[in-house]
Length: 183
Image (tube, rainbow, N blue to C red; front, side, top):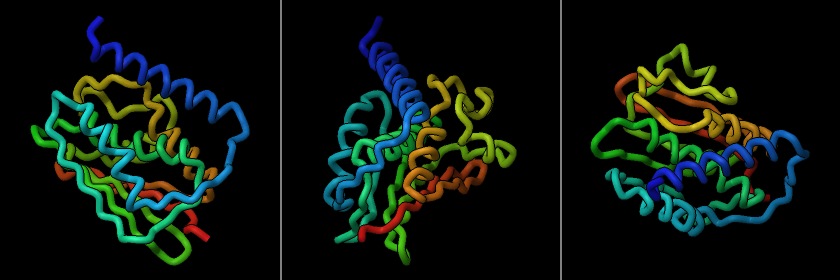
């Protein structure tokens, strides 16, 4: 088994365990304050550097001083799943991902946009269901269990937020979620 396949297998098992744990138990909604401007690069840089076979251009647009109160492990899972999807379901030679953080009245909005193939309109409601992936004929063979977006939705909702997708075929997708602002 190659190192890449080993990593993929470990990632699948970790995703399944995270999903099972988060769905089976009452969530630990403890909170710690995260300064997003300084924390996001620490979270996403290793993800991008681990992708040796693909060219990924990832930019972060976050205003200074935006803070979020959340369980750091859960926040990491949400962001990782959205960025991994933007990478995994992208057939472009150069994958462009933009992570944007905005302070709105009472909430923080975080968006992950990509330049992928987009999502067919009839699939948009289904993609947040567990074990669901957009048809393989549309995006190509993609490894995974179809749990990432279901997991992200469960965590965002548990903290009183909402998650949504906007997508246009041939022009990419934007996944946005809101969480209560730092108090």
